[in-house]
Length: 204
Image (tube, rainbow, N blue to C red; front, side):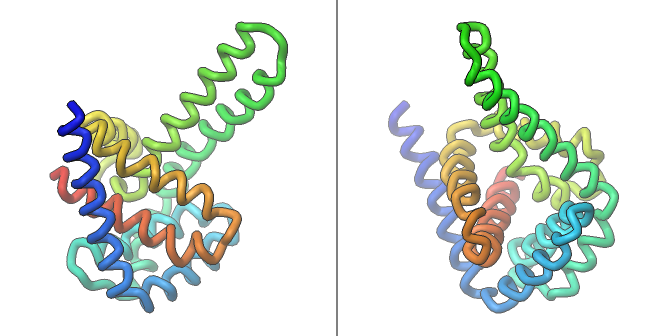
């Protein structure tokens, strides 16, 4: 069991290492794409399409070792409606779960505490699963939103330990980087999508 866990951790580190190489090789274009993503995301309604476009741009780097800035706009246009729906679906549940956790955790009584912890663990699970969402949307471009969510759960279930070793530190670092906007946009966002796209490509 321990040997299997170490093997999964090694594979995860290999994927992250390859993502770093791609990131530095395409650094200038990634930085420009980050600025465009930020500008497109300022109207909250277009944050989903901007993220889908950014994911599409990164996927071109990952799959073809090449990408042009126009690919970002191509992705925004191609996935506009789907990405708005997907962004809402993956954002609303964790907000509700986290709000319930904060509220009920402060109440007296075992049942309130139990429900609060249940909400917290569901929140963590949903956040982990949703890390795949915009990458699955791009790689399985003809699929429905329902199937995107289905595939997200299946990818997590398919190779659970590898997913955990990959997603947990990646998600944690991404969340920590949010207050430092520059680090989030120019480092964690591209590394996040490169890592997930690399991982999903190896699962096919």
